[in-house]
Length: 314
Ligand code: MN
Ligand code: MN
Image (cartoon, rainbow, N blue to C red):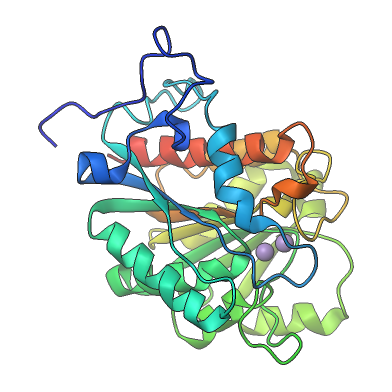
């Protein structure tokens, strides 16, 4: 892009608690026309199995992003100064028909990627990862998924429904969207229905780094294991905010005690520098259960980590 990127309003003139109500007060994609990275909201939670509320996630994460500043010292990068970053607004998604909603999310992601090189999506419940992976698969072929979540999300069916927030990666596997034996879960914990849940997941070709593994072996070894798992393949990172401990992210639909700290997850994401990252999402932020914006702030800062990673690969 020849012109200098359009950034947020000067905080010395317009304080950061003022508008616009976009991610980090960045310009709208409609206003700049095209961008290197777009942040798309998907206000959708019709796929949840427990507490609803993630439809309000994108608005809360945008509000939580206003305090972000333009320089990331740990990554030594200016995430929105080296190239254009823009807010693509929210996808228009029906709350009444899950299958129609998935098609709408797919269309919105495809339309956004016609004007932006990279996409970071803010959910919304985890169902949204399936249509996002479909669109990325069109462009990149099978992707190595790095999935941060307390939960497997590779279950097959819930209440007779094949599409919900517990099944997106099973469906992605069925549709051939994922690179065989190159995907990893990170942060698994909590009770499941039985050992067969893990056996099925392993048979699909996923590897698992549990929260206990991260605690025992540390951030650096976690990073090494992720990096060797995905190699040079196109990598998609999906972050279910419930991978964080409820102390760090109470505002979510299926909280599981004993999770990662926000700091651990930030450090792990920074360790993905240099991978062939093609897209990311942060999902399952449910503001009705949040306190003191803890969850929205954590999610906004995780999006900032992805913006930093993309800026480094510019
Ligand atoms: Mn989860
Ligand atoms: Mn999930």
